[in-house]
Image (cartoon, rainbow, N blue to C red; front, top):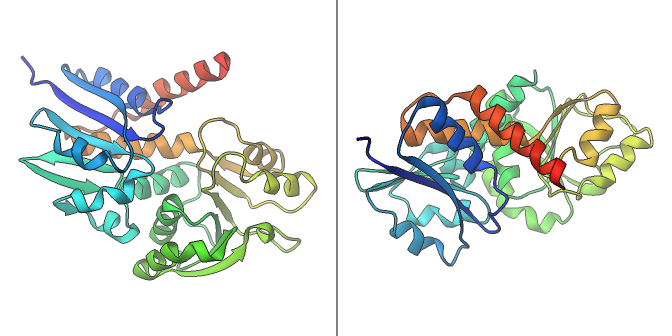
Length: 281
């Protein structure tokens, strides 16, 4: 009999997470009997106790906001990427130790590469949170050393600037309202802001402002965002939040199970669930 293994995604709110669909589809595709993956509501205050409660039957945890930074003091080791960006989205339990990883960064790189954006010549990032920090690391990995970051409040970009220094990336801060102007746009725009927060940019594009040839919107629900629709109509190649979610999940699956991730099966299951939710809305 196979040994049952548990995994889960933690966050708050978490009820609409797509991660259980992706990981469960992977278990099914590879015949990993006894493996289960659930969603658990957990905030920062509850994280230490929950992590401590994970015994020998646990393989790992996926972490969403606001837990990616909060988990760091609870880990025994942290991979270099998680240390650089100041956030881990994956915990692997191994021989009594808690190992922290960041699969958001390689997931972003994989999503961009799949869309044909392997080496952007210039990029603008919207936002200054944890996902924006991962975007800086992903852009660094594609070869960029200078990135423009558009923020609503420059005073709240201190953590991002600290991460940029660790990464060796020079950041040029820009007011969010000035992200697209009449001049030639950058090769790539990455929006890490919540759904609706980039609608002002969609309005600019709809009004005829030039659009970057590649637009990466990390939102996956609701999808498509107004930004994605406007940019695609204007001729841009779109990378969506589902692409990021899928590729970071494959990294988590491989870390937790030791098996190559069945990408196609995960993609099919995830897209089917998104279609189902869209039809039910």
